[in-house]
Length: 75
View: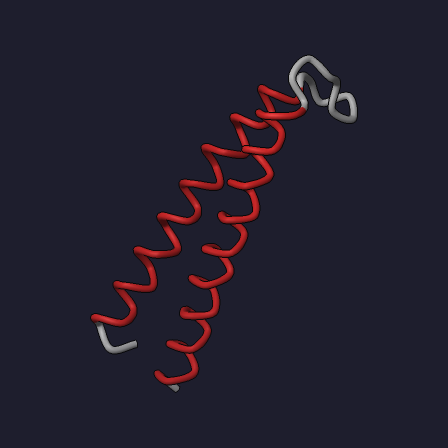
C-alpha cells in the first residue's frame, strides 16, 4: 500500500515539474515575441508571458522539492 502511494506521489511531482517547464518556456516565448499583441482576448502577450514564467518557475521548483522530499523519506 505504501509503495503504491509513493509511486503516485512521485508521478505527481514529475507532472508538476514538466508542466512548470512547459509554462516557463511558453512564458519566455510570449515575452519575447508577443509584445503588444492581444492573446485570445486575455490581454497583452507580454504580461501573460510574465504570468506563465512566474507560475512555471514556481511549479518546477515545487516539483523538484517534492521529488527530493519523497526520495529522502523513502516513499
